[in-house]
Length: 267
Image 1 (cartoon, rainbow, N blue to C red):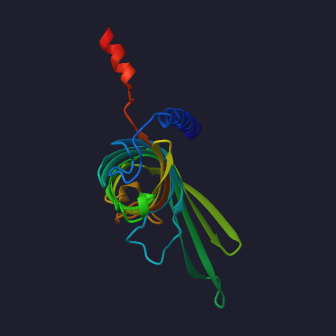
Image 2: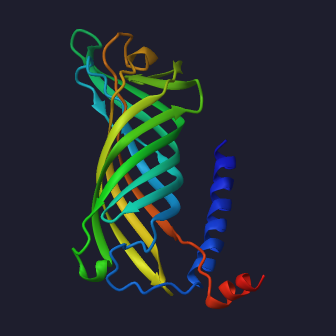
Image 3: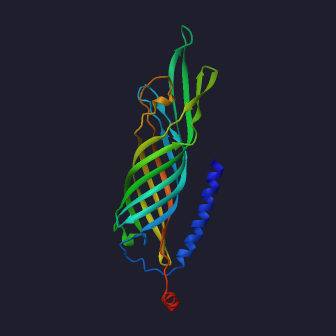
């Protein structure tokens, strides 16, 4: 599944490169201080990032959450309305959680040992999100660097119905590894973030680069999945903090010269 998705992304990247080369050869109006920094109402691009996800269990005490560093990659379509924009993003992501706790235990009457338990879970999802962004145009000269803020809604749909979690228990010189089946279900979250956009002029158009950081707050209680360190019915949510980079290509209408119109009139 992962290999197939990466092949699709590479093919799309090649198509976008060819499209960009065709666009860059077209004579378009000058960049200057255009009110539309993208020089187009629509844009399409590739996005990749690194989410750090965690699933806190609010009923557990004295637990340390290391979180899980995953990855995300996919496509972005953006529509501009002056300083505002709305986008549709489809991403292939890997998320999860890691946490542990330590607890003392009595080895014998005079000796105390340390009981250590790790819990790890990882899974793949298709992530769909609709962010709305506001660009602070005019902050820097000629809008070569534009800060922006965004917020939106996100849905994570697991590619597998079940996966396995791993619990590793260490006490003294003994180590025990236990695997358990976890039932996965979709998650919805709200996201908010900020970023910077820069553009590279290329013969009448511009290649846009975006970097952003965002936080996602899970809105659904996932306790029914039973992937906590103990079996209970407390509240569990999936949150993540992420850093992303995007390459955006404006989509422009094909321009026709006067000769083209003349030839159509002659027919």
